[in-house]
Image (cartoon, rainbow, N blue to C red; front, side, top):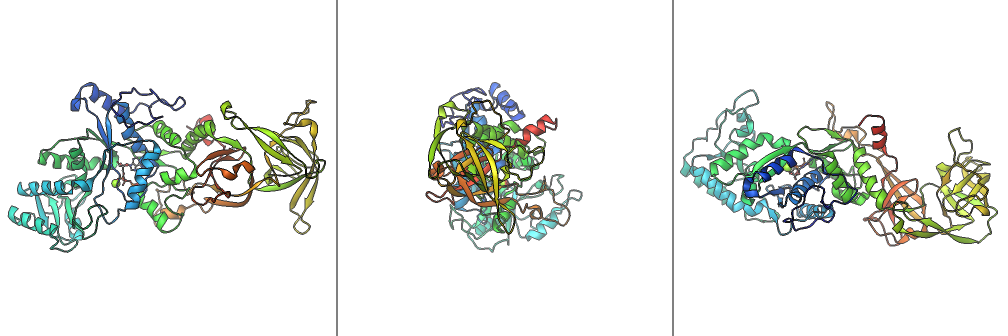
Length: 583
Ligand code: ATP
Ligand code: MG
């Protein structure tokens, strides 16, 4: 369904059709079933319209991806349309930078909205008129209580609210005051427009909620045209109605707001979309609230919204995540009504599954240890054949240089190895991938510290390509690079941003930032890579054999001097958990 996302949403596709072969089959979920039923019954005239309605007050994160895949995905699947609407009702927190990043992230994820890009701010005039209509019918009033007083009068879950002394203003007075609010005659926060519903309602959202507030602040689209702005709860349902949305999918916290949206639509007697709530995504070792992500950015716990440790789509893209991996993840987690904490290992599993198919294999040494091959001719070099991707024979082979001086991974050598260590040690023979068997003959140490500085080895010319003609076995195959040919590079390794499985679950008196992982970023500045990586394109993903998947950092790389991010290690925690019966 999603391989080549197409703006032509009129084409009917059944679930699974046209899906990139290896992606998971659509997981049944209650929203999909509901829509299938509505379509079969010909409700809404057989029409399906969903929408993705972000507020441009931050960057999109993996939780939003769930909503995007759901809304755009279901529309495509059932031959409907999905609108893209910015719910931009709060100028204080919204910025053009966010608008732009959100658009580019949705596109990157593989979805298209054609010409159906909307803004709640496009409806300001209409929303204002609707408010006037409610005032005229005695269903809305201007209230002069302060924000604190309104809160106090609202009551609690157990205590009913108390009517505002301004609740019974005449229609004429309300109309006049509301008009003058718009004209800018009153100060910020001095008055609001409220719906006149029920101060004793068991649902606090129904206790005369605020519809409009005065905010003398320029809006990123309407400029200074307005100094009153509609509240989200007033604008949202009506915006859906204006657009003819049939199925308005939102997260569970809006369940209690639904009666209010219904009230506005019923009182205004306008088209009534159906709202369906689903559980938001929570991910282990991650926070997904924009307010918290903004705090991480503002307090410089991370280097911006697109820091590769961030769960934002911009951060994940920079880290090397692929849209396919994220879409597959969103399909696999399913959609339900009960909140849960999804294991980060599942996301990484989906990522590896995709990268494994497509990433070119290369060799890169992260923590180099010099190896001198004593019996190899001085100044000699040769080029050996290496396979680009064993999963994809079409990816071909490449030549990697070999010479007398090499680097291997420091952790692949132990002077005094324990039993389970099968890699290089004094007197022991191992295979160098695609090259030769080498044997460690001696060790050069730093006289002062005793640290191993260099290994002297011999190679067996008869093992060229990595096979021994006499059937001799070795227990390890190491990756390596030729020292004189190698490319120096910086490599950044990442760990979870938090040490606590659920950092949202903060203990008394603590802040979620208390659980930040001090080891979430490790920078290695002296890595040595295959020379062919010199011209690696920003964003390009590779598997460094045995070390994980890496991609060229799109921000800090310079021509000929790439910086690599480790996207994910090769260790599949998800498979391990499944084997252990824990998933
Ligand atoms: P946050 O809580 O991160 O600030 P939000 O809900 O305020 O998110 P919006 O910009 O209003 O952010 O969200 C746009 C859409 O994305 C909404 O329909 C919302 O329900 C959905 N969404 C946001 N976070 C998640 C999540 N974690 N899982 C699923 N959907 C989400
Ligand atoms: Mg929101």
